[in-house]
Amino acid sequence: MDFELSLSSYFINYIRDYLLDRELDFSLLDGFEDLLGQTGDDFHIPVSTIAEFYNKLVTITGNENLGMDTARGFHFESSGLIVLLMLSAPTVEQSIKALVQHDRHFDSAIDVGLDIQATHTTVSTSLINPTNIKIDQINEYLMAFLHAAFTKSTRKPTPLKEVWFEHAAYKSAGPLEEFFGCPVLFSQKTNCIIFNSQYLREKLYSANPSLFELLSQMMRGFSVGDSGDSKFMAAICREIIRQSKSDTPNIDSVASSMALSGRTLRRRLADHGYTFQEVKNLAREKKAKYFLEHTNMTLLEIAYELGYSELSAFSRAYRSWTGEPPQVFRDS
Image 1: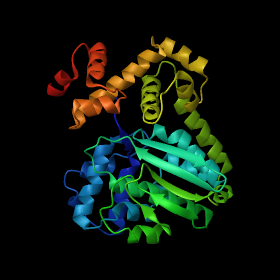
Image 2 (image 1 turned 60 degrees about the vertical axis):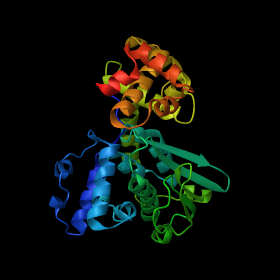
Image 3 (image 1 turned 90 degrees about the vertical axis):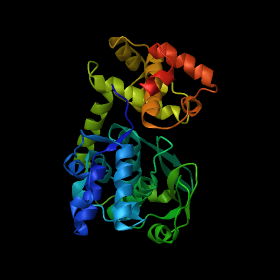
C-alpha cells in the first residue's frame, strides 16, 4: 500500500504524440525514452516524473506553451479509460460528473471539483503536489484538455468566462487567452475553467450509451473492489488524503466518494483488521513519509501540510506511527 502521488501513464502518450506530430526524434528525451513504452491504465507515474518530462521538452523545443499545445493536438485514439468514459457520456454534465467521481483511480495526484451555480459552473483541478516541483505545464494541459475535449465533442466552443491557474504568471497570457477565448488569471487558489451553466445540457456527439454504462460499471468496480484486495485499502488512503486538503474526512464522506455506505466501508475495514481512525493515521503516515523522502520541505511545513498546528504535535504523532521521530526517516 505504498502512497505515491501519481498521474496516469497516458500523459506519456500525449507527449509522444506531440513529438510524432512534429517529427521530433525521441532521442532528444535523454533519460526518458524508456517511459514512452510504459503506458496503460494499470501504469501510474509519479507527478514529479511527468513534470520533469514536460519541463525537459520545454527546454528542448523552446515552447513555453507546451501544456496547451499538447492538449490542443490531443489524439483521442490514444485515450485511456477515463477519457473514453468522459467522451461516451450523453451530456457535458454527465461527462464532468464521471470525471469527478472516477479520475482518482487513474490520477491520484489530481483533485477534481465541480461547482454548479445558476449562472455559471466551475470545474477545478488541483494537484496534490510537493512544493518544489514545477507543474505549470501540467496545470495548463489539464485546463486546455477540458476546453478542447468539450469543444470537439459538442461541436460548440466551450462558453468560457474565465480560466484560472494556481501558478504565478511567467509569460504573456496572450496565447492562452487566444486559445481559451476569455481572460486568463494566474496565482489563483485553484486551476479551473468557469463557463455558462447552460452548456452542461449540451449533448456530446461522441456519446455511446452502451459504452458509457459498461465503463461506469467497471469504474464502480474499481471503487468497491474486493475486500481481500490491497488496492482497496490503498484507494481508501488516497481518498482520505484527497479530502484532507480541503476538509476533515470522516467515514461517511469517504464511503460516499467510493460509492459505498458508511456501514459497508466500516465492515470492509474490519475485514482488514482496521478501524477508520487507524486508516486515517496510516494515510497521514504515508503522506508524511512521501514528503520527507521526496521534498525539501521543512518538518514544520510537513506538519502544516498534514493538518498539525505545531511541529511537536506532528512529531508525537509520527513517533506513535513508526516508533521513531520524522528526522530519523529523512536521514536514513
